[in-house]
Length: 576
Image (cartoon, rainbow, N blue to C red; front, side, top):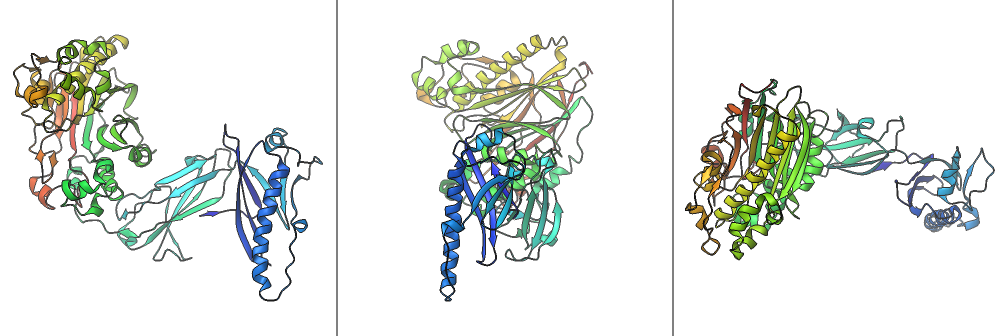
């Protein structure tokens, strides 16, 4: 709800748009009119025609009110001649009626006013404005609350003011102030209260626009008393500060794109009450969890585009945490992979996105392996039809000569597709090798120890399969069992090698994915072990914790995967 000043008419025209929005609030106490009028016209429309439209709408409203008064035998007299609507300036005698608003604004005339019957409004052109404002449907005590929509026009967040209020009833006038700014963390004392968020938009010139307020549809709820990630946070109490150290997180979030369906509620996660599968509940948990790990580098999978655009940009990308985020959608899906890096630690040199399916037959660096598998048409078709995405970022650690190439992916999931995943990994590591060689050449890196590879993701592959073997042993022979995971698409005469000495920073935990249908280790932080050493990795939740609510996701764990967290240090021999 907006609070339009009674003495101003607001006119807005966005850049490169011909549409003109006109808003004013007309109050007539005699007729008991208190109405906000909103018109969408064209900038090249004659002002006379716009004023006629305003006059007609005001007249309709007055006639409606007078008819109600007429029932009490009071005289009803309303004529269009009495509804005087005029645009003028006391500083100029120019007749505006034959002009368009484009022509009027080009004349740069000051002090323009709109007269509507007995009211006079100062014209304000392109004031700071709020196009939309919404609050979340679910709010938990102890978890950050922020608007899920706050779209500004002709305004900047840093020049706008936000205030939070609380009340036991949503339809009350007695609201108690409880917070300032665009974020608020409710306390236990706020449980059972509605929240109201009031925003005054502003810009760098000091102008302020109409105040807008939004009241939550639900009250603040109590959160469970204990979350497993809170115990894990005890291992990450502070950010790392040494220039040769970094903390890495990888986490499959369980996209709402998959969780919000009858199939997920009835088949995949029937043990999880539907309200705890809702993204408005789960996102509060995984945002607080991720923030508490105080990571330098965050690799995420199954990130909904809307969560990246609204929630992660709001929290991780905000000034207090100051991460830079890059999203890579998985083909045409509304989810994908994302990388967040701390701006205070890293300079982003470049980022790349490779859509593995469509690019496999096209890139010259893939030609050798592609020629070996394309003869099997079913195999070639299946791997090229995948929407699997590989995301990479080349980072420079600030104030050093060190670089990190980070790769992030989420490989194909199907149970009969070990061969597809292994091939996807082979193409991925070939691409990464190409990028690393290009980086060394372009950046003139003379010491090989000054650049290291970190490869994160949900590989949908257990340690016994070929991906782990390829990454840690650098070789998969042509007779390996993965090649025959689908008889009709069996891979023949292909053996794989890769040049990087890699290891898994968190080892091979028994579970990184845990549901009642399936539980295994699928997620890894692979690191180049001749460049880095592991300082620590954060212990994973115990099987007992994962089973408290049958499996995950649950009321205390927001995904069917658990996060992996590891602290790495560059080995001696690299430049400072």
